[in-house]
Length: 166
Image (tube, rainbow, N blue to C red; front, side, top):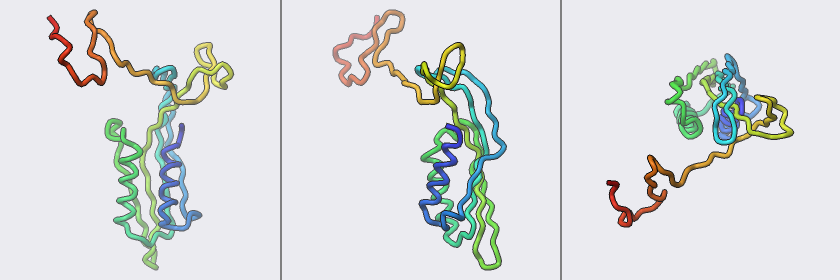
């Protein structure tokens, strides 16, 4: 879902009560929607949405160390593919006002896949079929064969019943 990560980060920072919730703003900028059709289970990733998420906290007077700890742990927990996507770490600007209170600007690049699933009454037409936004069903093989040699049962802990392959 587009900007889901930004919405979640916004909600997380509001929940921390660093500032009044009316003083937290967020938006997406520099967005790129890259078309692609990659199969995922019974669905398709049809778009890779990359954007810079910006969150501002006006009138912050708390611990900058705590803010950074809250931010970075949220990123690690909620955007685990950042390293594989070669995304830069969050950028933070602190503007210290005369009263010692800071206005904080946080910006970070997010990537989110837009996925569609088959739906006869869905609003998206693609490849002559109707689709809806959604998460695909992913099927995981529990056993298989390679060159007609059966595999061991997935999750089986006792290999004693299996003879080595000739």
